[in-house]
Length: 189
Image (cartoon, rainbow, N blue to C red):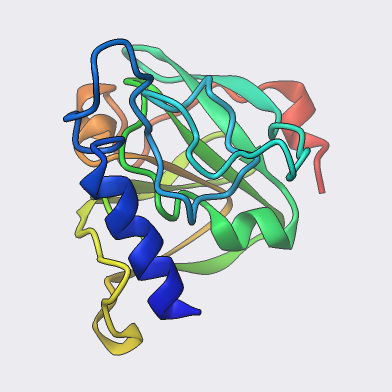
């Protein structure tokens, strides 16, 4: 299966859907075919290559979170399946966009970069919106990176936001910053 995923990723890259070498007028893909097909286009800087007419999956919901210098648009991963896939196989996010992971309690959560092909900022957030920890520019992996060599980061919070590497600093997000969380987010389990 891993060989098939690697081959499919190579095919996507070879035809230029990710690297930008595609034909004029073709929509640039912002994911490899191994991405979560439910990733919404609102966060992707291009199309989702994992979506097919056979999948029929509805896009994850998005919400807005207020940061000191911008408003973030975030896809919501509130169940285990979507949290597990996260931003795997995503090659390009819109500026001020990413994913928020919703957990049932404010605990210590470890994140890893399995199949995460672009550097990310990881932000652990308390239930009241206070930023507890920022792991900036966590190194990307490849689809072939051995599990033992994957970058891992841990923090405590009820929510974790992933943004493109460097985005947290540009948006004024640091430990101690208060983010404006929508009421709907606080009630999610």
